[in-house]
Length: 181
Image 1 (cartoon, rainbow, N blue to C red):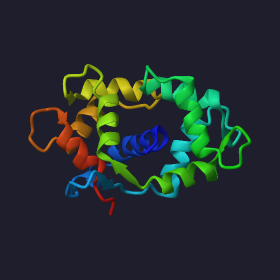
Image 2: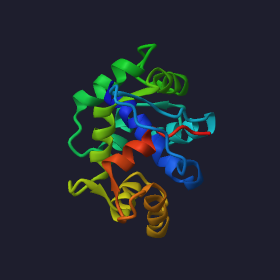
Image 3: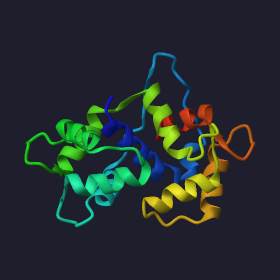
C-alpha cells in the first residue's frame, strides 16, 4: 500500500470525522492485516481533490502535492512525492487529474494495519500514543481546514469509546474501518 492511499484515506477520514453521526456505529476489526475502508462519495472526493488543487486548474502538480504532504508529514521527501506520482499519474503527463485521483482511491479501497498506524502517527503529533483534541485542531489548521477546538472536542468524543478524552490506536482503527452507511 502506498503513501498515496494512506494519505487519501486519512484525508477522507478527516472529512468523515466532520459527520459524527456516521462514526457512531463502528465496524469490527479484522485480524488479516487488511481492513475494509468506507469509500468516499463523489462530493467528498471532489472536496479532497480541491484541497490538493491549490491553483484550481483541475490537476494536481508535484508542488501542490508537496504543500499538502508537508503540512501533515514534516519528514516527507521529494522521493515520496515521486512515488505517489508513479502510482497516480496514469497518463504520464506529470499531473494527477481528478479521474486519476479517484482511480487511486478506488484501487486502494483496502488499508493494511501498518498504513492505519502510520496515519495514526500523523495525528499523534507529540508521539504519546493518543490523539487529543488539540492535536486534531493543529493538524486541521495545517491543512487549512476551519475547525474550532470545540468541533475537535466533538470529533474526539464521537470516537472515544473508553471516555478518557483521547483517541487511542484501537479507537482510531475502529473509526478508520467503520462502514459508511
